[in-house]
Length: 173
Ligand SMILES: [Zn+2]
Ligand SMILES: [Zn+2]
Ligand SMILES: [Zn+2]
Image: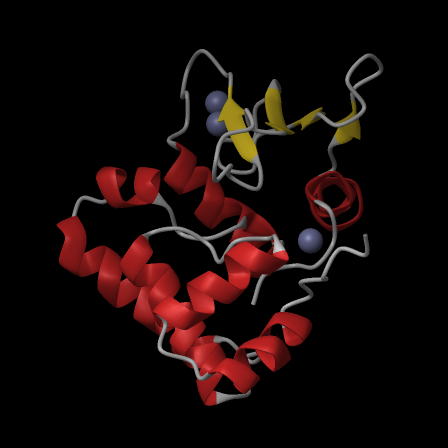
């Protein structure tokens, strides 16, 4: 299950302190410091461009020597103690970057699901599997999430419970 904090809060409270990153003065949503993979400076974690299904965070190693691969940096962040829940879902980019190809990505994704202590109900399991199938995290918005849950084969009443468990809120008009 994903981290429920807003991405910028997640970066500030869950990621930056673990990695020793500091908020930018002009871009307070961006955090910079040493690269968790190579240890050199110039590393940044920031907000992605907004798209239909934006990534939770993006990160760059700007060190001219290593230019660490994002997948490698992700592993290094996890090793440093950043929760996988905060890093966002395995994504298109990870799938392309994987040396083992799609089967390896799938195995890794399934391992992540089985290791996820927050999968408490069959519905959660179905949602996580649907994330792997679609290659995207479950939508953050209420309606999108319910449609996603329907595609995952979750029965109607359970979709609402799952939405609440996953921190999706129905907007009050
Ligand atoms: Zn690096
Ligand atoms: Zn480096
Ligand atoms: Zn977080």
